[in-house]
Length: 442
Image 1: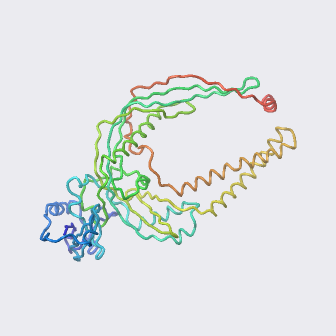
Image 2 (image 1 turned 180 degrees about the vertical axis):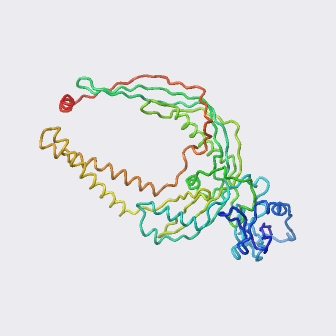
Image 3 (image 1 turned 90 degrees about the vertical axis):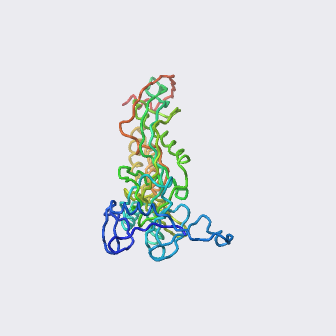
């Protein structure tokens, strides 16, 4: 039988929980409150306790025991029930008496986190955040709000590897400078091509990478950023009343994702030093890291699972900042109605303006028809942009690009800056006689 840690109230003996609103340990039975320092010594005593082992290992493994491989059985000190948890669970709640339990041994040695960010939002605030999140989604089916049933809400300390590093090296870009003018019967476009070289160094602090293989990485990155200034030195008492996982993806594997974000972040920051061109695009880079450090931390996340029709929807909320994310279904009817509404509105307006303008320019009644057709064609642009924007808002979950939220402000130092002219291209386009006549008239 494995051992659990349960923080007991010094007043009534009830199980203690971490209260996110008070930022203290609180007894839900007698309302007694305790500071972290008051339970710290108790935590240290429990950490040094040796688990009891009075079992005889003289029998072969049965089929039932084989089914429990990868699971561990814990004894709840409050009600005596056996709590079963998988190999990655560090804190859980007894399903019988709902007492919070912390699984001893999951938070020691290399498994012990360096830091923890405490919960700032409770369960009721999380429900309200989900309602507000759904309100802003224009194309969400109305029945989703009424028939959507939240099946599970759990407060979870998610394991993250936190990377601090400097990055130095060189990034090459290609840039274009475009000049257009009219000469005679031709419209001339001159394009100057440049190679842009930037060399230097900069620093990124506290880039998080999810250390759990069971949690979707794109969902965890969507609820960023986490503010590391709110992190505390790890104390297991913060876990009381919440679930907690330990990492099952090691720091070397997660470093690959951190490296990708550092590379993208460095390119983005170097790009901000380039000015005066009509277009700039990335070409290549040669970068290296220096003074790199990695820490293990637990970050607070609320996970909400809901079911609508036959589909399951998972939402994640940053329990430090309140940022909510999750993908949602789209109503085809709402999409079609909004598209038609904006097309009729903008198409009629642009058709009218186009008919007046083109007919006046062509000095012919045929210009009215041409202008209306042109206006109706241009009228498609507005509903397409509007509908794409709101449909995209239903799928906000995505991996983050770069590491702008973790760039150390003022740390960038450009040691070499070169803008090298490569060549010039010239294109000529014949201007129609009608267009040329209108240009001369103006």
